[in-house]
Structures are given as C-alpha cells and as structure tokens.
Length: 241
Image (cartoon, rainbow, N blue to C red; front, side, top):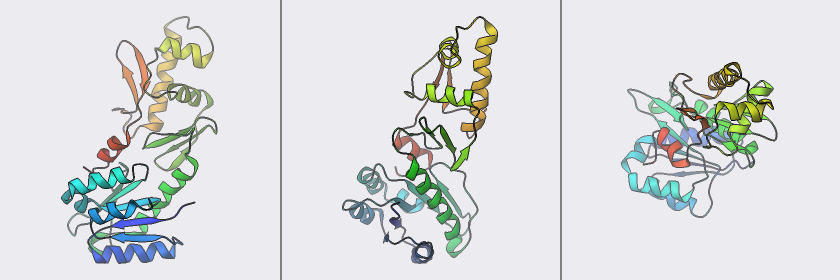
C-alpha cells in the first residue's frame, strides 16, 4: 500500500507533530509544504497517497487550492481546521471531531483518519464504486460506510447493487421489484416492499436518512442512486474552492 503523505500547513508546530507521528506509524514518504501553491508544484512530480491540508490555508489561497485539486484529482484530501478557539478536523465530509495538542491539533486523530482513507483506497478499486461517504463493491458484495464495513441483508444489497449500475439511472418501484425480486409486481404490497427496502438502505448509507442525498426518490418516477463528483465531495468537505 502506498503510504506517502503530503502535509500542507504554515504552522510549524502542526507540521512537526504530524510528521513525527506519521513516521512513528511507519509512513516513510512524508513530505510537507508551507503553502498550497508549493503543494500544487510538489504533486506535479509524484502524487501522494493522501494530502493533508490546512482548511484556513486552502481558503486563503483559493486559486492555488483549485490548482492543487486539478494536479491530484484522484488523491484523497483531508482538511484540518486547528484554531485555539474552536479546534476541529474533518475528512471527506465526515463529522468534525474535537482536537487537542499544538494549537488545538490532534495528530493521533488525524492519523486514524488517514488509515481509514488508505484502507478504503486499498480495496475500493474498479469495479468498486466510490460515493465518498460510502463505497460499494458489487463483486465482493461489500459495503463500507464512513470507513466501517457494514453487514447488509442479501436482498438489500442486491437492490443497492442494481441501483448502482450505473449510478444516476431512475427505476420505478415495479422495475426494481421485477429485476431484484425476480417476479412481476402484483399490487401495492409488492411496490411497498421496495419502499421498505429503500428506507432500510437509507438507514445504512445516508448520514441523515430523513434527508437523503444518495438514495433519492424521484417523484412520480421511482428511485435513483446519486454518485457525487470529486469536486462535489471536496465542496461537501468544506474545502478546495
């Protein structure tokens, strides 16, 4: 597994703390940059496995932040926000966590997040489908949500796999019942069966099942599974813009 890491921050204490912690964890190729512009130049020669970027720095250097994203479009980016008043960190749209350490930064928590991303990247290769918050591997029949593998009943997984190939296609409840359950729907009870399974899937794959953003209902037509683009995922993480 590629363990090269690029840290982008102008706070020397954070660079030092994270660099030392990463090396203790066995990461060999740890590089650092003190500006987003410097980082964008650095990834041009060799894209790292993960980029860790100061949120404040990315916001100040907006144009260079966009160039960094363009330079490494397939590289996961972890954004840290470390201020004395409200120290937080987030990863690909994940929930913020309290932090401590130099200037409010928790190196151990960030390393845990890095490992989560690397584990995801190590197994989620085509035909794995990456939705950002969750990853689906149709062949291996695996579902990982927010970095944790989730057990899913066979029929629910069949439904998710069908909706995901390809993402964005709209299917009526009748079509889903016919294709996933293997029988023609007879009446309302069969289409209600589909609705129940959709509801249960949302409880597994949605950060907020009552306000879904992945498994969507298309009024009058049916259901679709939405796959965010890399730029949308970055925007959800509050970052490179």
